[in-house]
Image 1 (tube, rainbow, N blue to C red):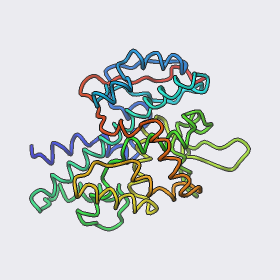
Image 2: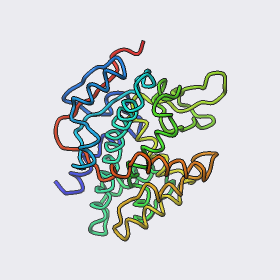
Image 3: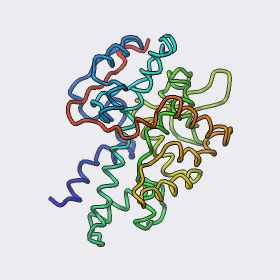
Image 4: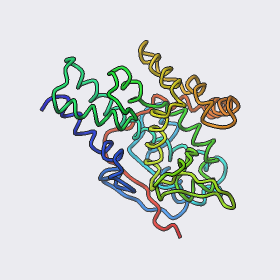
Length: 296
């Protein structure tokens, strides 16, 4: 089996999700262990005992494959410290997994172009990948690489914190909507959360991983974030680590607050030392998913 084919097959989960073939808990694959929880307090206890600790994440730069699939409705009832630690851990591993799916596509793309020639199978895969990343016509390898790339954990965490009020907003608890992504006009999607007493609809998701994947897809395809992709590509070209505080500059169009929004994101990153989590990676080994046992 060629390197391209090997990598391509491990990208199947990402490709299927992009085609909306996966939903709910299935997006995590086949976790070896599933643990139900009924409250935010119970979830926090599970996370404390799972080995997913922020202190060790910062020092060891790796975390276990422990995922929280849904936002608990009672996060706001936790103490401030417990709430913040729980929320950051909930988002951290899901963002890392979503980034890993992209890295698999990126590696497969590099392998496909390694000999400067695409065979029939490779050409079809690249065509499908291009469509998934928003190109109507065949892009150059360089242009496609600019889109098939990751977002720093620190920036994703800061946006989730700001957009969802630490996971306590109506949109977060009712639809795992953590990044404030509005439902596009005339969208055929039936999954949305509507603000109480207002005509504001945000896209809703079955799991936290799905909302993280859609968030990354939005930044990687929306014209409004073209500058972010150029900044990221420039950093890659000189082999610099991606920097959430720097890339935040390119998100002034994400919010009506413009540069005030950018300033807020940078403040969150600095105040919470989120940049220290950027080098973090998922460990190999057992996958555990914590899921809500009852939402009643």
